[in-house]
Length: 418
Image 1 (spheres, rainbow, N blue to C red):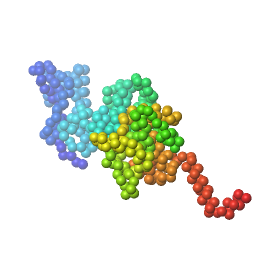
Image 2: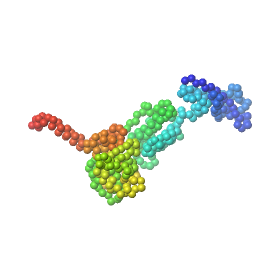
Image 3: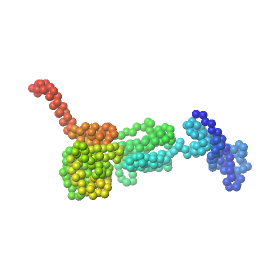
Image 4: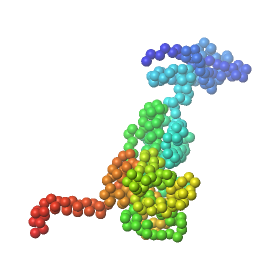
């Protein structure tokens, strides 16, 4: 596109100290009669300065070096103008100055990107998701400080090596407080969040080329913990003296029979318990994580747990349906409960959601599409991560198939037995 703006670059001096031996050298950019000035942090005297040429007089080494620098400034200002033209940007004196000084969008840094992302997304993403982004931010800052010895880095400096080095740092980082290093999937989640922020920078045109274009995230498939029918029955039949343990046990079992996540159970209110057209009670809620509407018909065991705390929920000021402790406290109690029941598995509250998908529903013949709807998933593939068809169910299905085939061809079956 043709640009009719006029550009003029003038190198001149200004006396700030009333000292003719210490003039400050400036560059003035003029576009369509509007100016922007840049102090070049160089100094000269009245006797040495040639106002017409905008350069110093003489052939001394000092004069040659200063003139060479002023020539380079002029070239860089013209190059900044050329870059803006090639990008179709609006040409102004301030825009050229910002490009020359590295203060425009083309010179954004990683910390600026992180700050922009976290500021704009804090009202869009869930608090739990933002908490994970803050964690990734801390790792990135530590990586810059510990390994690159830099306070920050320009986005245009991000490349494939930066990503690989950051991955290695995540896998080998040893925190001051003793704990395990990042697992493969933990490292991949941090890189996935960095990738999403870099994608935002690409869309904002803060960076031209995506450093992740040749990088592939490598997640390992994990076996997610769930309870078998026997283990579920063990927890149901075990009673605890402490009321806290009983509450955690019952809330956990409620999740096992509804598939609701910790936060969804915690936020459940009495008005969300609705009598359905089938005459049974349903839970009507929205998933905190995805905002998907979920409608779950209550199984008798889940109803029984609600009935246990009916009086408490009626007295609760905000109408909480069940007494739910903090996630941390709940998981600590669950470890004790599992040990008391002789269950040698790593159990967290999220185990209940896996148990609902696997043991309670799919293994009892509930179609995966129905399970997906009750779990509040937007994709069936997400449900398949949770779902495991148990060996017993596979055996039963094959026995049913054998019986069906025998009824279709009873003569052949009798001959094979003879």
